[in-house]
Length: 202
Image (cartoon, rainbow, N blue to C red; front, top):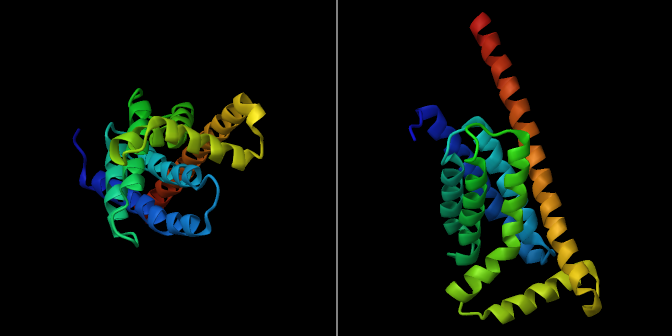
């Protein structure tokens, strides 16, 4: 993949934006103990990354944006936070795999990338827990169920409903992130194009 200087700068800008979101909003959500904060952070971060992909519609661009954001996470207060760093990278990887199925992204593919990227927030503890933190799959499962029940306010008898609603909420938020990324990307590119035309006319 060959990238021009302008494309590299664009990737760096969007990667930095995602990193700033993680460093600022992430810290606020964590300190306030907001439910489903991982979902909100993933949605905002992926929105930024997917807008960047609209500007640089080349395979690998989303991964590079995610890597920059992940590296910036190193500067968060409290030192290296391995879990969130892995989360940033894997969210970018999931989105990249989806976006790479087309040469240029469209609204549908952005919606799918956003949905799967945000849903990864649910799956990640089942991977990183046992591999990185020595937690058993069973313990991670119990923590997941406890969180889902508390967020939705449902009891043990509604296990299937809890799981379905929890996953559905993440999917919907991810889809909305894709829609927002597409619309913002189109509008900004359109305005930049008009600005360039005015400069040429002058």
